[in-house]
Image (cartoon, rainbow, N blue to C red; front, side):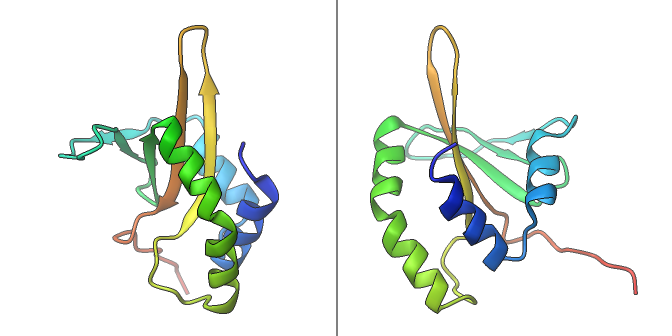
Length: 116
């Protein structure tokens, strides 16, 4: 988990509860991979409900995002309705053979349906 306090605050500003985030990402669901012509060659996945996009990233991309995160945080705090991508978390999974970095972000095509 990278910068957990910063991402927790960002999720709060974006109206994503910690419970909803963890259940959607860590729940007993399958991720949906989609094919992309990503220049970086990284993989993209949808969360089971398509609410989030999970993008693998290189170590260099991870370092860069952490470098710009303070400016992003400040901007979002002043512009809560920003059209910039909404980043919800950045994590790393480590196995005996490799480290996989990934970013959780908003799927702009997700529609939150509520019954009234």
